[in-house]
Length: 120
Image (cartoon, rainbow, N blue to C red; front, side, top):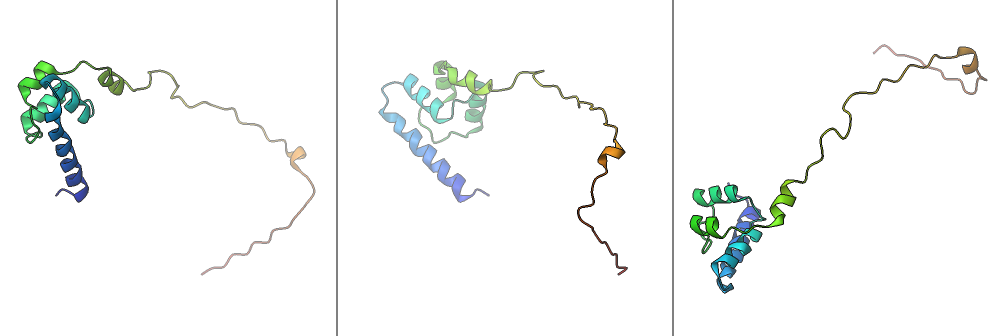
């Protein structure tokens, strides 16, 4: 079941898509709708159109997208935002244990602690 937030987002996206009638060409309309859809990849966008996810969007058809799909840098930059391999080691560093020096550890008694246990 859709929440009110997702319904409001869908209505807002549909209202944005209907503003596309003011653009002078189909190429500009597809470029604008591509930006509204957050620069999705062409294959994913075509799959969503085939599935009927953009039914109410004017001029957004399979043929128009395959013909006028914009070549932008936003796609590459968004999908290549990954860290390089082998930057950090995943091995745990082994530190040698220090040998305790008991005579140096003895000092003056500063505070006494009393502990008592109760068997419940």
